[in-house]
Length: 138
Image (tube, rainbow, N blue to C red; front, side):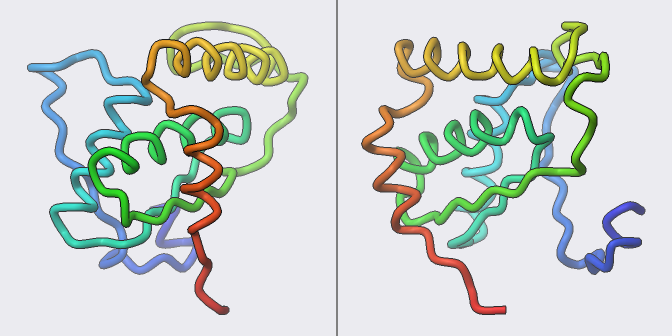
């Protein structure tokens, strides 16, 4: 409904199937894998990542990391969702409670941790991936 009210045609919205009963734990890496595989199966060449502003860097970096392995031709673009008050208390999808500003700090820590673990590609690889991304003319 919200996308339709923003002028996005229903034909342009695709829901990615996920079995929540078989796999109740969904997180950014799983979402990235599902999204990249969904795009690859359909022959898509572009994917737009939309997330709350504090999560955009890690979400885009994770999807670009997965794309680099599974669908290297996939161009990744990102866009922050609706701006929200950085100082307002909020609940993170993983149950943390705090300000969005604090969540940003947590996201930056996670980027470093997941890079060390290998779930997010090194900065140099990501820079090369994003540098290849071109945006269609408006």
